[in-house]
Length: 192
Length: 180
Image (tube, rainbow over all chains, first blue to last red; front, side, top):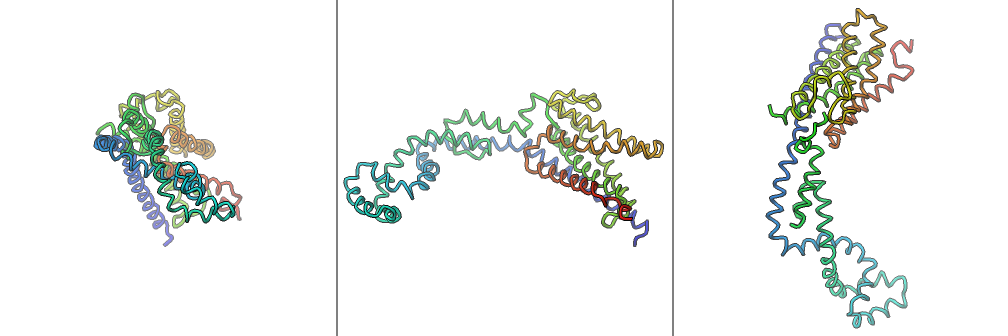
């Protein structure tokens, strides 16, 4: 089996196998390159259409989803250990809650914080009511900016951005597609 | 054929040419070791090294030819041989031209090996070690797909193959007769 003829045969087989792999590699790499060239343009059009279709629905239902998405994580993470006590002091209904709360927390400085969430649980609705009132006023304006700036470069699926960000959206989406898209470098010659 | 297809095919040919150059470097090192490789005899390894190297030359020719026909690449015929004259990223594109020049020299001296003698052939063939990093720099600096994962994976695989081969080449027991 180690004759020169079998060696030539195996070498020829390996060579043609590599040739086939090379042809498949050219086809695959070209397909990937072609997809990177064409796909961003095709993906932007539906995104723009989605944003146009959602624009009428944005003003009315915009408040619930944005308050659920954006302000919820920071409040949910911070309110559990610390802010349970602070909102009780900040709002005015302390007239009812503060006298009931301070005696329990005063004699036990360390363990009361761990035990306070249980009795303050009914207070949570009271705290939750002012939080969304204060949160949408600030974060909605901020979230409309951050969401449009962060969402569009990564992918064009951030169609939930507000209608006011249509100018920045078109600018950012074009800029994001200039890296791999052929449409933008047309004015300049491209790399290989 | 649309210009988009030419553009994509030119890029694909360039990427596979880089892969075949990496394989050619590794197979050349294996050939120089004088050892059989897997189920292949020594002359089989040399045969495949020659085949892969010529396939890489063909792919490089296709790479340039397709980009030359693409109206957006704006390549000129002189860019084939004279480096650093390109309109777009002339340095990185010029490195590709330098790699093509070295490749032409290596191929010609390989085809004229029996007339030039082993010493000249071997001396010129050493430039292949310079050719590969220049071609890789051209791909990384001038490539449009550098930011994509698949291209990064291919380039990293090429780097690993060549680095492992070079590490094997620098070992003391690299050649088969070293243990004799």
